Length: 389
Image (cartoon, rainbow, N blue to C red):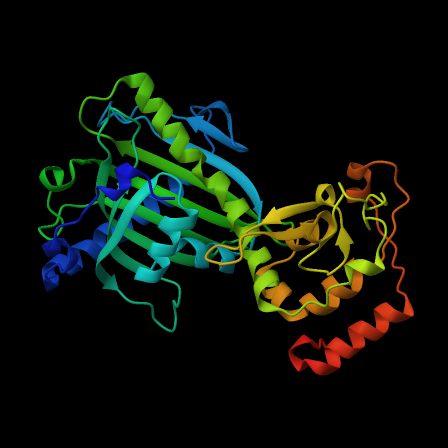
């Protein structure tokens, strides 16, 4: 939901159509981008005792470094986190290379970034490096009242490479630049132009399949008059923004499963007890179909899910399906969502466990009735897109 402060950010018309870069400017930006990317990756992956852990925010371990010798107003911060995701998923979520992607991100998945725009594409991907982009991006960083928001003009590099260990890595590095096409917008938007150096995100495949190690590193000068304690609070909050990536990836996977595939719903009249907790339905315990496996559950044994951009507000998903989807990549869900989800997660599984938490960690047992099998076969034969063979 856009706040009233965000709605007042009206970019001037001339800002939307910047003049093309000259050859000398383009060559200089390519050089700056290469140096900034190498410095960022080295800083983000560095293991040094001078970094002090300052706590955990939203599951993200936040570290604070010593002030920079060249600019003591800048205190570097970094964060570390492990998430269940693939490089393809995080790249699709964070690349923001088209206007539609940026609009969708600002409306649904951003936290702390109020506006952004691409001013120049410095280099385009090549067949040898299909995921490498160098561009000039303008963005606005949200600051708490009474401070004005901070905007930045940065050269951004997106690159994927293979580490000596054989694991793949993908990173987004940003470094402030000064360009005539991105003037100071303090008069137009009442924002203060800040500086960002060797900052960004790096994702590295771990030894555990489907798990990424995430590292963020930020060296930011907010400029203006900002108390030291408030500067530290703002930086810790923005470093901890990487915590929302895991939640957003899970939402993407849920949306892929909910919106893209036909699921046969078990008739609610066929069930008198909740499939999960086995409690009897009555006037105060309503029946709900899981949107991914089709079984019937009570309200307490399902969670609400609202796909971003969907007109239908409330989908209910059971705990087993939510856990299953969390452990699968989007590509895996696309390949075998019907066979793996519908046939292995439902219908009629029973778990001999006294508590809900224990049920989540114990294997369930299938109990397919003839009606269930016939209904699944009929649905598969009627809709070829549901077949997994």
